Amino acid sequence: MKAIILAGEGNQDIEYFGQGKALVNFREEPLIEYTINALADSEMIDYILVVGNKDVLTPIIGDSVDKIIGQENDILDNLIKSISYFNGEENVVVVTCDIPLITSDAIRYFINNALDLKVDLCYPIIEKSVYMAKYPDARRTYVILKEGEFTGGNLIMINPCKIRAIENQIRSLVNNRKNPLRMTRTLGMFITIQFLLRQLTIEKIETYVQKKFSITGKALVVPYPEVGSDIDNVEDIKVLEKYI
Image (tube, rainbow, N blue to C red; front, side):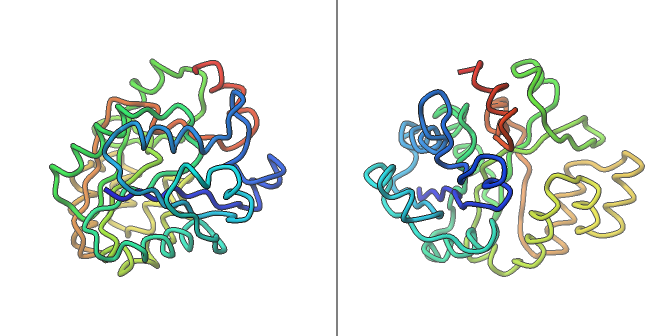
């Protein structure tokens, strides 16, 4: 399977770290190395494409991946650009560069179970109790659903052709990924009301997404909280480093 690592340099990253997150030092290694190693060790991935600052990344990871392409203006533009390299593929794994606790076991579990679902889009979610049991002092954004509280993962399996067709809707979801209420507004009034009443279920979201966007999608509850342990600022590094 092909994999894409999103490693673009955002303005916020430059403000927090003085550089893109991909090369931020985490226990004496660049953050992106943890993602690359987990993908390679999973033995599920036969090609890794990285999108980011090509000039900066190439000397560091050029020998560890198959291709590095230059970044665009934002994370969604980087996604759209990168998946265009895989239009002939039915499934591509997209992962961020800032999840240093990610493991090959977590990646294998996600890919195998996502493939079994046979959908256009599969997104991992982690129950709050599972996450807090392993990383009690790590900060996460949780969505309250009828089944419980969940946080999202930092990898996803997609069908490239289907994703390009709903670019505008995805852009709104990505821009509001840290604000659950705004995310529900992107999906429509029905979903928003259900969310506010705490009657929203995973199945309702999946059904509504299929109807509204004409794609099949599933949320996969995973037992690996490390897929959701990303780095947003320096404090996150201090918190997560002790778990290595």
